[in-house]
Length: 119
Image (cartoon, rainbow, N blue to C red):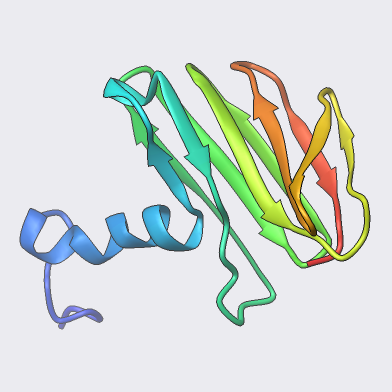
């Protein structure tokens, strides 16, 4: 049979999929229906990852490697927070250092963001 030994179409088998978006991609709502949210990616030893988190009003797409972060959201306003050993470069937005080595970018709906950093 089934390669995972369970159906990923049912809530009791699909919960690990939800955890990937929440803890690895780091996408978490900060208000109802993801009208505001935070993205705090955690590679956890991986070289790269990418995924989409479904929301009521569209998807939040995140792609992360050790040198780039790409984000696009269909709705809401978010905060991308990440650590970098160098000052990051961001297209389409401003980056602000919120503490030593910890940076934040405000994510607006419909904008493709590309962050160059060193994780």
